[in-house]
Image (cartoon, rainbow, N blue to C red):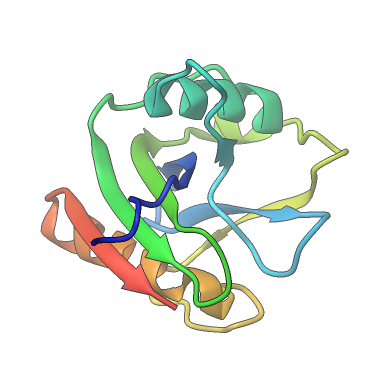
Length: 151
């Protein structure tokens, strides 16, 4: 008999760029490394709605986010339950939007734009490397990407 299907945690995040094509990442106060702005999908919420809500809560921005995910990834850590990640394209942030960013200081300590070629594990921790690679693929091809990642 096959084991019961896994019930993953679900998160969604937004992919914003600047005029140089760099990706906006935020630094959580509760864990190492940097992430896309976003977070957990609440009960009864769609991943897209969660992304819009999280961007508003974390960055203080109300923006249009593409409703189709650019990256979908099923991640199975060796020591825990799986997690399903959705990344939605948020587009290029104008200088005015960047100036309007107000971090949710209980969760985030900083925000910055990073080149897509970034590989520094202090920025992109090993647990997020597969997602980052999928994001690179989606950005370079302009096509949605799906990955299954075992850690």
